[in-house]
Length: 388
Image 1 (tube, one colour):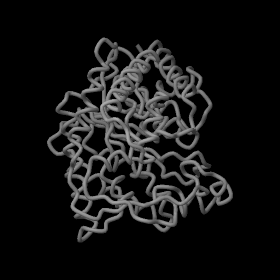
Image 2 (image 1 turned 120 degrees about the vertical axis):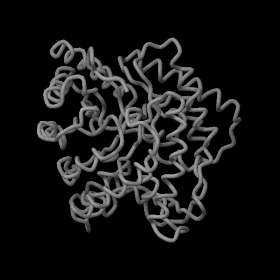
Image 3 (image 1 turned 45 degrees about the horizontal axis):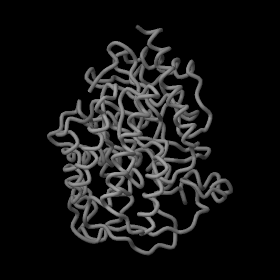
Image 4 (image 1 turned 180 degrees about the vertical axis):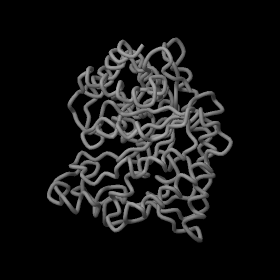
């Protein structure tokens, strides 16, 4: 994993706006339409090539495939793991914010919202584990790897990564209706995901583990205390480390965030209450929200937290939770603060979350997402001038 040894490097958290044709095909497939698989595969390869080139044009140093072929950062795994089944539900998905601390505090706001985080949308089908969990996504992860590697040829970037979901997110969004207890179920998920993780690293790419549930769990469970949620998070990290067994930490980036919630967010779990748990993940870099107004102040925490020498921070210095495009000087100031706290070589500029965690996401228009990445790149250049 590269460090900012000569200049401040830039990256993001994975999902980016899909090219229009790719988006249309994903929607058609999600709606149950029959697609020409050869044509779909060709379009995926083209989309990945386009999104990688676009990242390079906008000054991103450490790039990925934009999750171009995935319907969402989470639901993609249903194509890769056996044992899940869609079951009827009369309420929105458990991954939303119905009944959360935010919903209870601002019911009128959430009732009027039909987007991610809102409670005013139509009921969705739920998912359950109804059989033994096993990995079947070998061909799909191989496709992702092949497409990203092909797209990197002739493109000037520093490094590349592929995102993959964490055990805790699969566990939380697919209830257990098969295993004797939840611990057995969680361990089975981890064992299955290990195969995807290992394939990415064996291909010479960085693995990014996406784990928004780790810190979102607190806001979704108003009946639990901070200590309850810390204990839950500690168990999730323990299981994640099982899934990462045998993988060198310096090949792993860990990302957590507070999910897609364009709301007041007064109940976000504070970083000070969970940072020690996060640092127990066997990863070489930690990506987290740091740009939005609920978390911008938390940079000071890193002046007192002991970050191990072999670890890197990827703070979000641009955010997915506002359509305002950050001024490059503000981005630079944020990067300089983190450099002052942990050292310039251990800071990589990132984003709070993805800009299209669902393929159909409309919160951040593509033109704004790319403008934010421009601001990130220019801010990193300004920070480099001040720090090097």
